[in-house]
Structures are given as structure tokens and as C-alpha cells.
Image 1 (cartoon, rainbow, N blue to C red):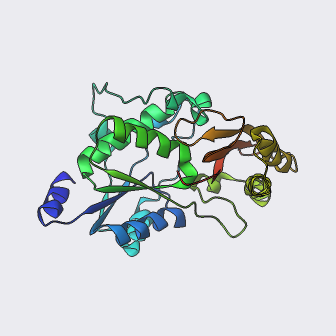
Image 2: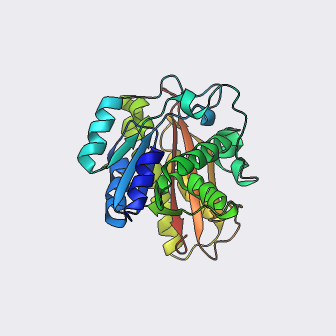
Amino acid sequence: MTTWSQTARAKGRAIGFVPTMGALHEGHLSLVKKSRGRADATVMSIFVNPAQFGPAEDLERYPRPLEADCEMARAAGCDAVFVPAATDLYPKGYCTFITVEGLDKKLCGASRPGHFRGVATIVLKLFNIVAPDIAFFGHKDAQQVVVLRRMAADLNLPVSIEVCPTVREADGLAMSSRNAYLTPAERAVAPVIYKGLNAALARYEAGERNAARLALAVETALRETTLIIKEYIEITDTTTLDPLTTVTEAALIAVACRTTESGTRLIDNLTVGGPW
């Protein structure tokens, strides 16, 4: 992979990078499309990173349709797909990790200790191997973006991180590889998450700036079903992820839930008050 990237760079080609864990969907492919419009060559990585899964999480059952994923990546216009083995990236004796202090313990980090340490570590390793000029991430994983932007700035990494819009199903559910876990009943009600976010957005656009009342708009929508349980609904600063009491500038409305039949964890978000 490194040799491929060095050859491309020697030819003056800018490299765009889309890191994934596979189980590709239209959200991933939208990142490839964005990369093809911004870079001369596009690389996708497919790697289910064990370092970002907790002991009780879904590492073993995470979908791995590698052949189908590679074909989808090829058809979308990727110039290369990097598929390392876990032993390639975490050989025996491996003991070095990246921690973005503070940001790793907020929002999802509060219930997933070590998750963002695993994310930051693998992304830094992939950046070092692929050597991209631009890396593309989806808005759905907003906390991940905030963590990685901080890491890139703090470590002076020569890569630009671009955030692309969340891609949604026709009924508003944010596309995610984990949606495949949902039972039919859960899938039918899952769009209530986006409904709640839009209710908060409508209140904001009507002049509401109190964060608690914006969060209540999301929670009211979630109460329409017993199949989805709130983990958190938070209104935060888009850079520090600190909770806000009043929205005066750009803010993230973030929600995490867990379904009651399959135990699937779903996240989604919107931003209000300006770009981030």
C-alpha cells in the first residue's frame, strides 16, 4: 500500500482516502464520489478494527462481505482497496496507542471506554500507510470527526479531513452497517430518531435557543416507541463537545439510542447555528 501511494505521489497525484470497516452502503460510496471530485486517486481501506470494540460489543458478528465490498468499491471508482489483516496492524507485542484526551470520554466515549483510543490509533496508522492528502468522513460520526480533527491538528499531520453529509434512507434513517442488525419492528420505528432531530431543528429555526428545550424535542419523539431507548441526547459545542445551556453559535445536536429487541446501538446528529 505504501509503495502504491509513493508511486502515485511521485507522479504528482493527490490521494483521497476513505477509511471504512466494510459492509459498504451508499453512505460509504458517497465519500468515494466526493474523493473522486477532489483528488486524483482514491483509496478505500476495509478493516474491522478490534481496538475500537469493547469486550461486550459486536466485533465477532460485525458483517464482513469482503468480496461484495471490493466489487462495490471498484464500481464506485476506487483506484485501490487496502485490506490488511489484524496481525499486519497489531503484531505480537503491539503496545502503542493514541489518546485524544478529554474528547474521548464525552458523548459516545462515556459508555464506550477505549473506543476513541482505538479509532485514533487505527486512523493514524492508516494515514501513515496510505499517506493521503484528504481523508473523507461522514457527518453521522460527528464525534469521530471532532476527535480526528483534533488529533490531526495536534500532531501536525499533513492531511485535510473533510466531512460529508449524512446519507439517509428514504424514511430518514441514517445509513449504517449496523442497520442490518435491526429486527423488522425496530427498523419500522427507527426513523423516529431523525424525526426527533428535525423537531429540534424546527424549534431552533423558530427561535428557540435553550439547549434543554431543544433536547426535549428529540426525547419527545423517541417516546413514541418502546423499541428504542435513549442513551443520551446532548447539545454540545462542535469543537470541544462541551455541553451547552444556550445555543449562540454552531452546535451539535447528538443522540445515541439502543434498540430493545436486537440491542443495536444507533447514533445520529444534526448541526445548527453555523458550519463546523
